[in-house]
Image (cartoon, rainbow, N blue to C red; front, side, top):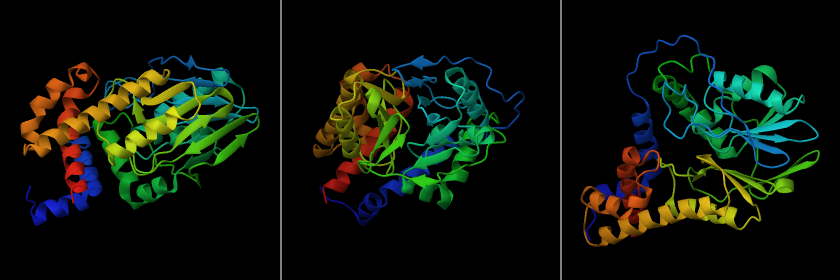
Length: 329
């Protein structure tokens, strides 16, 4: 196949282009007319092990109806205090997380882990910090760098507009301590091992293994029956799934969708592998991403009922196409 200079430029600027595209899709001209901003719906806690609980948020896109809440906040009870992973997307959701934490333990929240810098996972840091200002926020160093370079402001704007003002008042509380692959942090009777396998869902995703309970928190490197865009690499995302499979953990928490055993990893892994393989096959036959889309949808019928499929499959095909094109050089 022949490639133009334009195509070569596109492939070398892929991450930046996809961030720009994704933010353009997130930010739209909605009008803010929020009333009561508190989270009034009762989202139940699910206890997964002796020390670990999760709230399975709505398996849908951010909207006014869900007040921006869509991810899976995780609670870990240690002898030193509570640890929260990915509290959510607004100060109001953070307040809900604090109230839920009080039903688990009367100990304070002492740590917050952010798996990555997409706003639906970390902007609720604000609500927790309002009550527990000494709680330390942990994340990969690249997350803080991205947020400081402008992503924090973009996400604040995106969440507020997508929820029609339901996140109003939220401020960006950025990570305070960086963690990296292989690091083990101890919180009394709980040890948390950090994994970073490079570019996956983003270029800075961390994953956490609560060693005593054999619970593995994937963040958005794993989704259960949920499809959305990701900003980095199909191959990298597959590598991160393999890390979880090889970790020795028995319970796995995705960024979106229900928690489960290894079968939820295998299902998502099969989807990613099949999607990229189909795109590559049609790419080698000379089809454009637009031309191959209906053929690929037909081949992925078992995933068509997953949340976000209709909205995102075309853009995922395009991302796979660009990644394959880049690999061909």
